[in-house]
Image (tube, rainbow, N blue to C red; front, side, top):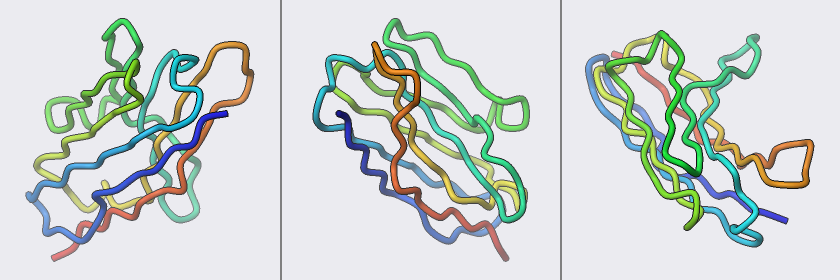
Length: 117
C-alpha cells in the first residue's frame, strides 16, 4: 500500500505562482511513476503532469511552459511548480502514484488551487 499526502494549495492572483508537494509513504519501492491531476467543478479529472521513475516527464498542453514537475519517485516525492497561473487553473489538484503489480493508481486527498483576482 502507498499513502499520498499533498500540500501547497491556496489562493493566488492571476499571474502568480504556487508550488505543490506530494509525499508518499508505505511501499515506495513499488512506485513506477508519480504525477498531478486536476479536477474543476463539473469536469473530469485530467492529467496535469507526470514523472516516471526514469525521469521522463509529460505535460498537458495547457500548462506547458508554465508548470514544472520534479521529484524523485524512488523517494516517493513529487512537486509541481506552477507559474503564471490563470483562472482556468482553478481546480482541486490530486497527486497520483502508479505502482507495480497494481491496476488501479493511488490518489492523494487533493489540494485546492484557486486563481482569482
